[in-house]
Image 1 (cartoon, rainbow, N blue to C red):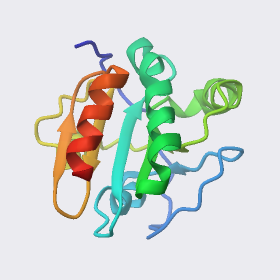
Image 2: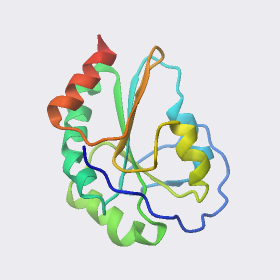
Image 3: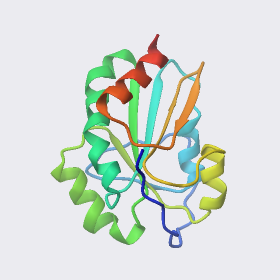
Image 4: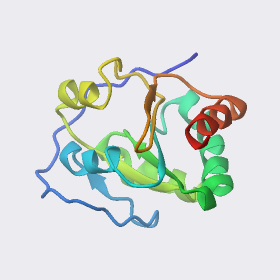
Length: 164
């Protein structure tokens, strides 16, 4: 298992709370945790795969194609993949957006910018140290958090446990 330690965040703007966020990767929304939280707790018929990553995290970048494959393979099986970037706010325009375009990422991409990481890291998963990559997989019946990088096979196996 490999990971990158998250670094301290810079100040965030106070953004209004939202229930739903429409996403186009041409325009990657920046959210605070209050705006992201509803996407981590949906009670619908989908299986949600939420990957926390950053462009500066080599293990994160290595596993992104696996999440893209899940997005393409399981989209018709009610599986939703959301890639939550923890890139620094000042790097969004210069690193994150060009990276997403260059890699032609088709999954939903969001940018989390919230300086209260001591709160939201533990709120997402009590066991999470804040290291990247990290993934939350959940549906209405089951919820599991993984502070690790995945191989394609490992990720597929985990997804299958939520679909069967």
